[in-house]
Length: 71
Image (cartoon, rainbow, N blue to C red; front, side):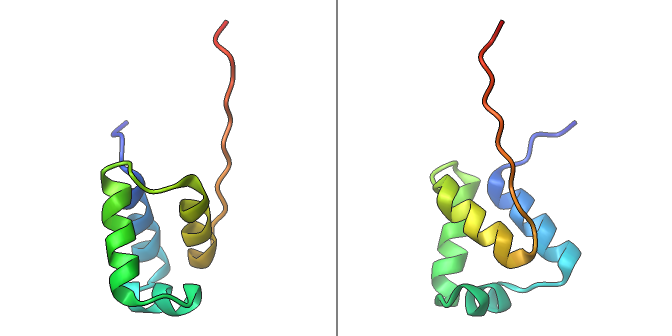
């Protein structure tokens, strides 16, 4: 299985749902340039989890995180 960046995953979900960056920006009440910049940050693992959760929810998805101690 290929490891995708958060940005790639978000783009894939947006494409699946037929949501363009402008529509996402409107849902988040942000400028399109801000959304574009943030998605590029996700490509380099520099975005925050909080922001990723907000973007995913605006696309219609929820994120689940599980952190488990190694045995």
